[in-house]
Amino acid sequence: VELDFREALFPPGETRVVAVAVMGGVEILVPPGVRVETDGFAFMGGFDEETGGADLPAPSRDAPVLRISGMALMGAVEVHCRLPGESARDAKRRRKESARRLSEGSR
Image (cartoon, rainbow, N blue to C red; front, side, top):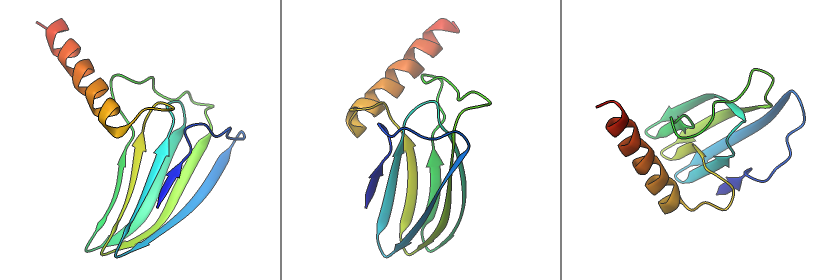
């Protein structure tokens, strides 16, 4: 299952998502600027959040909150931050280019 919230308009406050993956996967895509909080349990699987990055702005203190809870049993729940319309390949390329620029700037 892929839940794509990149073009969603979040109300102020908190939005809750309960994700359950049994022998499968749930991928949740969020836009920059949304605070993500995860609280999940995984057994023989993973419950992962990869939303940070130096190349995207950090969410503000009053940003909407997406709270993801649930469980993964022999499966995975993954949360990724991507720009609207950006593919997984483009996001990887953007992160790699940003890391390269950061390392060149620190020299």
